[in-house]
Length: 328
Image 1 (spheres, rainbow, N blue to C red):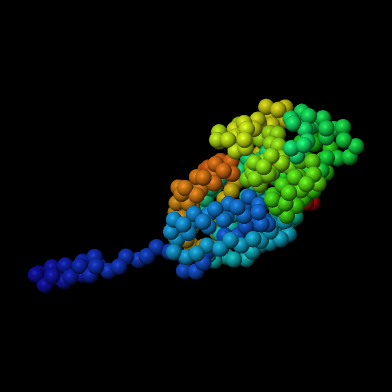
Image 2: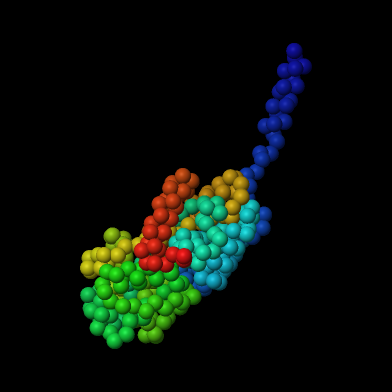
């Protein structure tokens, strides 16, 4: 009996001293895939995350940002779809994941990927050149009176910017000619140069040219104003921008910013990235970025994220159908 007790004690001691099985973590650089060009909101957010992860030592491996905006972002979606099982690639996604498969009939569905977390929401703003109309009412009147359709810059045909442009036509009776550019940064440059009359860039894409007094923020496409009240320009904070509904233009739209892994990764790998991006949202870099770029902070994962994605997918499909952008 004593021998059995001694043996049991010895096994217990060995188990106690044995190293714990390590949870999964990347063993090579992690690639944040951006379905857009340089300078746009997705590129900016990816680089903020890269900096937050590296400065706060949230992961042993380095992070690289990979721009795959070819074919209006289809390059990134198909790249992720073809990377099944590779947990070293993470897509920073937005409404493209719903809209592009509908408009271009590419063989992609967000359900092909592994959802990790929704990390922010984008609001959109109607911008015109600082030398242009000063209010939404004046802008609409000018567009109606123009001998040719107002040129509206945006990021990608038959996507959120284009949908908002069509809705503005439907609500106001004005005519707009939509011009797609490679990124929100390029759309901002075109507006400053007066090559377009307006754009519906999200706040981050027009931040610097707004601060420089080169463009004017006419209204935000949301049911409530942007929450941040610190002055961004000499005279205005984000919160000073009225909602479009306040200005008589009842159009609303929010866009997700979410992280996805390729399909067929393990639950352990998903858990690693859920934890990683939750830590990112707690960093100073993230919090400062949310305010600077006027994004809505949010963190959804698991069942809550799946519920959100299903509802958001239905909403975007409805908007695309109303705009006539679904390929037959």
